[in-house]
Length: 87
Image (cartoon, rainbow, N blue to C red; front, side, top):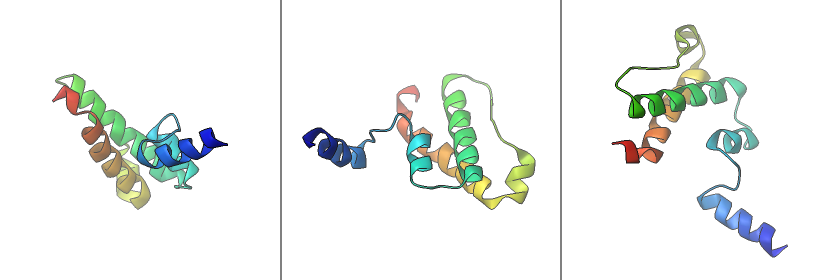
C-alpha cells in the first residue's frame, strides 16, 4: 500500500507510466490529440539529433483536426523541454 501511495505521489511529479503518451491516454485525451502529440514529439526528437527536418506531421489533419494540431504543437514543445541535453 505504501508503494502505491508513493507511486501516486511521485507520479504527479515524474509519472509512473512508461511514457508521456501513456500518461495522456490514461487521463482520457482524444486519440487524434494523442496522434498529434506523438508526431510532434517525434519531430522534435529527430530535429534535436540530426541536421535534417525529419518532421512527422499529417498536413491534412493539421488543417482539418484542431485536436491533432494542438497535440502536435504540445508534443513538439514538451519534447523540446525534456530533450535539452541535445542542445
